Length: 90
Length: 297
Image 1 (cartoon, rainbow over the protein chains, first blue to last red):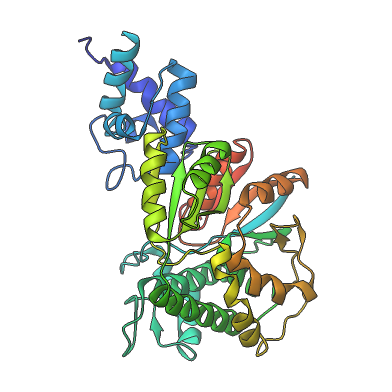
Image 2: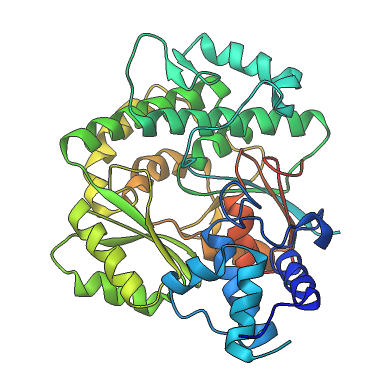
């Protein structure tokens, strides 16, 4: 299994900020292992749909259903691992 | 510079967090308008409860939503914000009407609480449920509705190309959620409602709502309020009919936003405690500016 690197983590933080129009946030305000939903970044299902579209547009990676989405959108790091697993990117 | 639309959201889905340190608590309008509300209703926003009464969760949410929208509106108005046009989602119409001075703050509170109590009674006697489906286009959601023929399902909200809300009986809604997830929805979840709001099942209540509206005198709105059925401003003489029918009709939020953008609106200000409408607008058009009083303002 390919290992997640900091460049990919940064790209995904930027994707979250851009896609969700979080104008007041910078990538260093998002922790790679913090929960994206609930008590973490406080995202909801409407945000999840934006991120599904963002991953598809930016990385060509598909989230096929809610079950996969739940696992992938746990944190920035789990998103990065999924991108790597699907694309083999470093 | 583009035009500004004030957007009044529908019912909150959970009790508002208003801890002592919350910035809204420090605003002079907060205390002033809660005091004014307390002369009319026994609902206590800070404790999210009625004095001496066990009321339903949805009724408490409805009154909280109204009060918070109005407090945010008065706060913004005092800071010089003025809308070119007003739009609303679902039960956001009561605050929208009060903000546009078609009715007073007290009349808006009276309508909110009275209709809320009718819906609470209906929820207890007939029941019902609602679900939010995200990530499926209209055709797929409509197919789910048709495949569950017999469960009285209807599309209650058209919130965007991949955002819909279904209303129906509880069993039908549970089946719809399971079907939506099996057909690759990104999310399919129950909303807090215990009624099938914005569905024909509630049309029978329109006479009762008409009767209670006889106690209210509607004036011409100072700011136009967009009617999401016709996508034209509501006329004074149409408002009572709109109020009595809207709980039995779908909400066409997507076409409302699209019309406003066509009309030159480039800044949408969500007047309430949440950020849901801002997120729905973001999905419909990423280029317009959205600001939420519950977030950035």
